[in-house]
Structure formats: C-alpha cells, structure tokens
Length: 211
Image 1 (cartoon, rainbow, N blue to C red):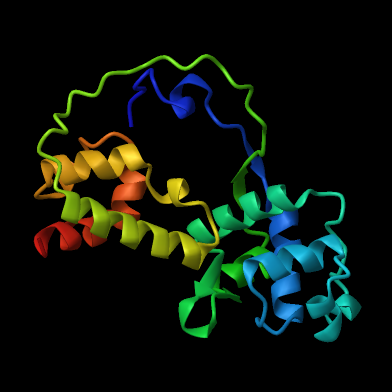
Image 2: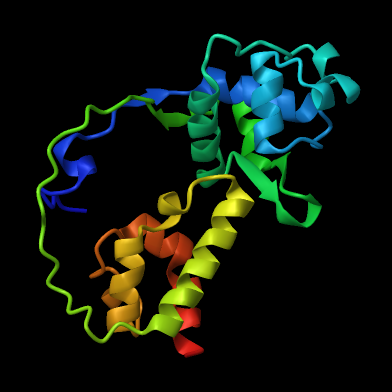
C-alpha cells in the first residue's frame, strides 16, 4: 500500500488504460469458440492464425477471427492474463484449461463495464543493484522449498504463465527459510503484497502447515 522505493512497480508505476475493447474482442472469441479454446488458442484466433488446429475446428470462420491481428501474441497473453486475474475470464481446470466466461463477462459485453488493463511496455534493462536480503537463508527448509516450487510450477502451467509471475525464487526461498505462520508474516516476504496474499496466501500456509 506504501511506496517501497525499490521494486519496479514503485520506481515505474504501471500505466493503466481502458481495455474494454480488447476484453470484448477476447470474450467474443471465447463465446464463438463455444468456450472450447485455451488461452493460446484464443490468441491464435484473435490474431488470425492459420495453424492446423484452428482451421480444423472451424474457428477461422468465426466473426472474431483475426480481429486482433495488429496486436502481438505476447501482448494478447499479457492482457488476457490480467482479465483472468480480475475475474472477467476464468480458466476451467476441469476442462483442460479452456477459457470460460464469468458473470462479469456479461457486464463487459452488455453493460459497458470498464476493464482496466496495465499497458504493455518493454522496459529498458538497467544495471541491477544488489539488494541484500535481511532474511537468513542458512536454515532454509529444502523440503518445503521443493514443495513450494512444485505448487508454483503447477499453477503456472495451469495459467499458461511463467513461474516467476506467480512468485519468484527469492520469495519461495524466504518462505522456506522463515516458515511464516500467518498472513501478516507472509506480507513480510519480499514479493508478496496484498494481491498475492489474497490469491496464494492460504495455499502457501497450507503447504507450510503440512511440513
């Protein structure tokens, strides 16, 4: 909630824009594909891909096919992931990670609900400054660290995102070294803010509790 003065978000606050048009494109594609497409497949449909599986399923004939061809695939993945995190779209893990609509989807499509999205931007690489952690990693619990990485990697595969998007190795190492006992202690871990606490806090505490 307060500026830490160290992380990318605080040093370079993200630019938020109205992504309602992008959301409508994406939701339309999901619906016209009968909610049978994964994230990567929806990106292919929006970009007008001629990949065999897209053509075989007849998705090249839907109205939304190719409507987002001017937007790079990496940008689409970035935006759709945000829509998932905000609840405008859901990943159905019981149906091979296919994208499905949610109650918020109808509000976007028919009630002009605004969808705030962080603008995609390539950040220039800068000289990294070594920041010393105040956490002693000498007593790191290797078993807990392994379990944390397995949980994180599994969740990343389900969401089709890199593992570090869930939590960084540094965060997992600090958790394995300190074994936080509650949500307040989790907030003291580097890389865990309120949003990640709400999304992953209980799962992490459950893993710690099984050790």
